[in-house]
Image (cartoon, rainbow, N blue to C red; front, top):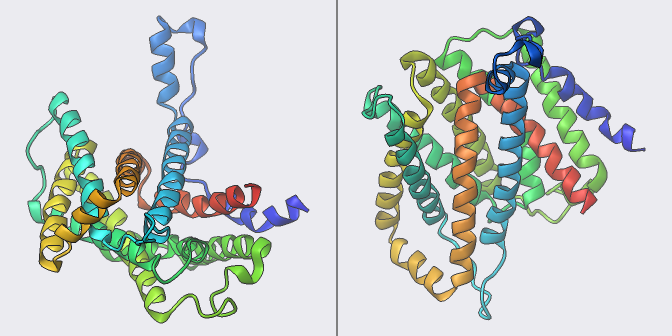
Amino acid sequence: MFLSRLAPFSVLLGAFRPVDQGQISTIPPYWEMHTSLDWWRSLWETKFLKLLFCVLGVMSTLIIYGLMQEKIMRVPYGEEKDYFKYSLFIVLCNRVLTCIASSIFLLIQKSSKGPVAPIFKYGAISISNILTTTCQYEALKYVSFPVQTLAKCAKMIPVMVWGTLIMQNKYSGRDYMLAVLVTAGCAVFILYPVGSDVTPYISGGESTLWGILLMAGYLGFDGFTSTFQDKLFKGYNMEIYNQIFYVTLCSCAISLIGLLFQGHWFLATDFVFRHPDCLSDILLLSLVATASQFFIFYTILTFGALVFATIMTTRQVSIVIDGSIL
């Protein structure tokens, strides 16, 4: 029974081959290395171990991130049952903490402290990333977390489209077909155990047109963000902390301006002061979001945007597995 439920997921496992076997370096026996440090360094240089590190880091942090995100946006706070509605405030908190952490690492590193690419290119990633996160938070007001999880299975397709437009990557019809099969396989896997509970058209119209548009915006902006990050890494030989710092610095400024322009800054701060448990949830979410950003940037730097999209697609299945076990 369990194996039959994993059948659609086997499509994804077959597609997840980001590096050739010939690229995986051979680890010399321990006794041939001069020190134990040399052996551990040689072990870390293998592509497989780096990939495993990326997969575990991205999936573990973003699973916690998704659960905290749904709690903040969909669970009422206090005796008055107030809902937190200011998604841009959460984005600002996330980016401020990430900016502080990346600035510390940037100061420790001996690499360039200034921007190595035109600042507007950092800003483009920042704006796209803010729109991605905002669409994701806002969509939770209209669709449930399982429905959102199902939509995220289509991450690979926008990345391939943006890769063709931005980086002139060439994908064959077979590549696109494989991406469609991965998406369909994950969708079937998610839909199978819960049936109509995930289908908005059967569960009373939970997923409105606005929610669907927000999820489409999320997928489009998310695909652009990871692809353009990959382009900057390859085009400017950029250090990971450099990109994280300047992108999040732009994000802090844009988020703050957006909050003030919408008139939500004082409303959001008043809400978290009246509900300290909400502030604690936002701080925990920001810590996890900061950790996830480092894993995400490292994955894109090392393996590219499409491998990152594949990991994110795999994550959607793991969320459903965890939910079904719990």
